[in-house]
Image 1 (tube, helix red, strand yellow):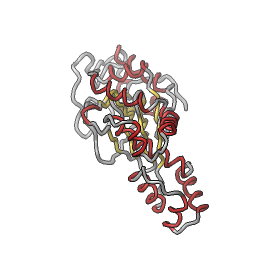
Image 2: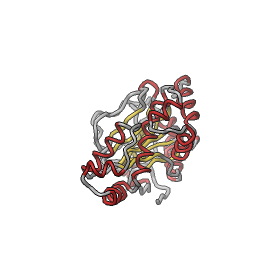
Image 3: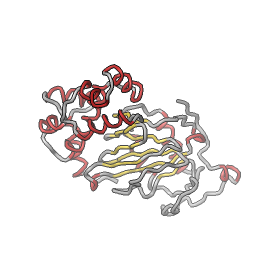
Image 4: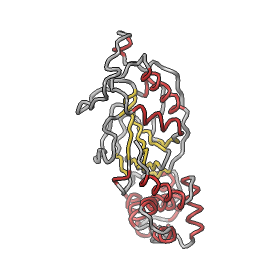
Length: 293
């Protein structure tokens, strides 16, 4: 990862330094079909509750998707990236993706940043889930209210630079579910996702696919970087999130996700998300009752 403090002005503005653009003007709606970024850092004005692009798409710039309220998932052909509270998903330019919000659509508030990663020194070629500090959270919220063509030499430009600096030092912290490309393995993974409470072992899936246990094990490791059991565990935890958010009893959620032991479910949830199921559910309810943005 490399980051250097760079000029946040667009190339055209560097040559005509001193032009304030629309600094101080009211924030405007972006042009439909945005073809270029008006600034190296662009706060998406339409990033409000339920404003998402449901289809798979890609950009010629990098994107940071962040739920200031609720949580979101970003699906790419290679993985599912889950960003709980105080986490965001980095999506590099050219990566096909789909942003999926919480099942409680009225509770999710999305703020997206579009960035010229090369100009800003954010050399991150792959999707990743990043921790969002309290300072970065406020910077993202405040930046989305600034004029689109802010003055790069004024207060808004300095705010953008601090935002980029804070983003550059963010640490990886997320729940990632790698997705295979092999059709045989995709069939296994789809079944594990659709029926997380079922408990077929590796041998049963091997027989269904006409493969040996050893071959399927190697295939899982090569395609996802995870073993069969760890992949299934992550898939179960991803399934648990919307159930906890809507207020289901933790014991019922554990059973719905294939756990016979409540303690083992709590331990696995904490290990992968950094919080207990109860804390996650309480945070979701707090989001529901607290108006943000």
